Amino acid sequence: MLMDRYFEAIETLQARVRSTQRKAIVQAATVIAEASAVGQAVHLYDTGHIVDHELIRRAGGLLLMKPLRATLHVDNPVRKRDLYGKERSMEGLGEYFLRASNVMPGDVLIMGSVSGKSVEAVDIALAAKEMGVKLIVLTSLTYSSQVKSMHSSQKRLFEIGDIVLDNGAPLGDALLEVEGLGTGICPASGLSAAYIMWAVTAETIDQLMAKGLTPSVYKSYNYADGWAYNDEQEKAYAESGY
Image 1 (tube, rainbow, N blue to C red):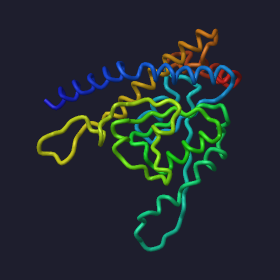
Image 2 (cartoon, rainbow, N blue to C red; image 1 turned 120 degrees about the horizontal axis):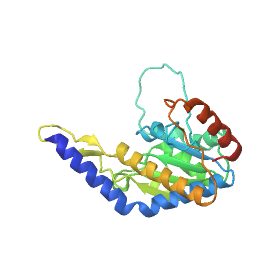
Image 3 (tube, rainbow, N blue to C red; image 1 turned 180 degrees about the vertical axis):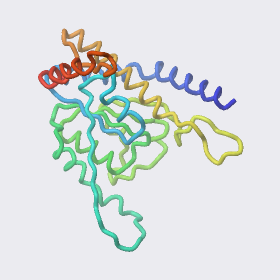
């Protein structure tokens, strides 16, 4: 059954993460814990493959994980034309994006992108490095190394990050090939990225507590004291940064 094949593929992927990403996970957690301990902030920019929602305001999750998002709306209803090559016109917005945010030198920016090739993501990553922000990249080395960057620098995220977390997704992301279908099914990147980032979370908590610091963690609002507990955690985070 396809379901059983999927279970096996996910188990294999998670085993690969455990055997190959442990060092990078510890490095990422170390950077986050050290920055948080001295009042720096942690920002999460994800292109939409689970992590952006999985880590934010979740019971058992760290308050210090904060989303970094922005939208740009342009209203220009002219007739449809060929946009080939126009993607580079968006370059340069990465610096503005960061300077318009609350990102500061010494902060940590976690960027998630499976292919790591888009103009927007690469532009933000380059601007972050220029600002003196520590960059943690969550991507697929197998996937990203086989695609061409859309940015004029020709760089992909894994070539920019200070620390690279490899989610192990194959080219195209799908885990299973199915005879009779024109494409693969069941993407790997979302579950693998969540698996990695909860491991980073656990290690970050471990390291902060080893420093004698108690990190702020969300409690389920379904507990009787959930709302009051989380209000206190919000206050603690606002004062300490962790």
